[in-house]
Image (cartoon, rainbow, N blue to C red; front, side, top):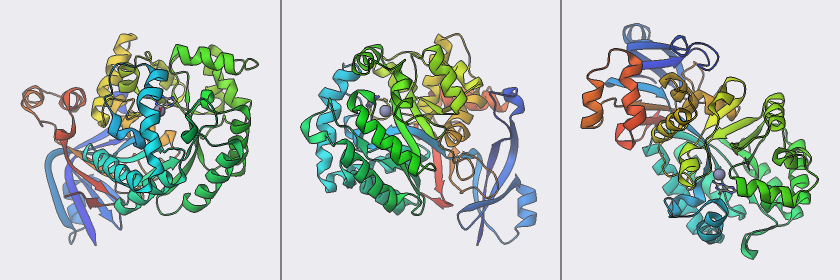
Length: 426
Ligand code: GUN
Ligand code: ZN
């Protein structure tokens, strides 16, 4: 059974950080995506698609914009209920809000409730895939993968490992982190659309032994992603220096223990040394920019110039991040880049939120593009979703002018529909 999803189409043909952004996309004002068995089988003009698939059912979204569903490359589903907690910077914020909330995930029923809530919120904001940290509790990993399977969503997740500088009820050991992570990886990695991500929280909460144990696990499963945090706040970096006196820099605390590699995702990566920048480029590791978090917790201004040379994804970092919306996240990325003297093009912002994040997850053959064979994970954007956006959109003379007001001022009201593996939400 073939379905045609019709609307304006925007499909990237190249990375807009390596070619002029306006040359990086194909635009069809009257386009359609043909979908069968949950996958994209063709895209083109609506007329061409109707001629080729005359028996297909039509879902007509008028002049709304069809994009690949947003990909949130770094978030913490266990922090959904503490999003927008007031007044702290990173370490105090973890101790005051995050750790007490994560302790509640010792109750599997609570974990499942928040996992369901998180994925429903993500999807309502146009996000069809995400990479999430869980908590120390293995059942918190089962909860997010079960919730994702119930919705058909491709999700990356892993047990967050911590064996020091965390409350008693949130600490594991080097050995139990290895054993639990391995058992979860065996259970979930590649089960349906689930993918396991090995997850040491960050160097301050892992001993060298724990980092080495997780590095060994990664070496045994090199097709897995590894996700962690890097150089988010200056106090944190000073603490890492004290905890790892022999390390050349923060990245070296990972590198020395086998936790640096091409399939590594390094959240934040704001205050980097030249050596770290070089090593991240040489290894092909991904930096994940979390701009609403970086302004909300007061971390600093990510250097988007790195996207010209490095693999960079975009993410909400919920609940350090202040919003579920990748539109709001793109707006914050635009503002942060402006504060560093660079105006990101709308093509670059949309690419980061889709294909860029998918490439960071090494999954651009499945998500983040409108290529044939990709999963039919789509977001349909109403480009005139509020009065102020509509009046600005009415003045637009180009596609990029038409979409930029939604990037800057849009939120979940702009999400006309999402499709996950070809299934609409409503
Ligand atoms: N660094 C270590 N853990 C966290 C976390 O949960 N959120 C953020 N923003 N930074 C972290
Ligand atoms: Zn984070």
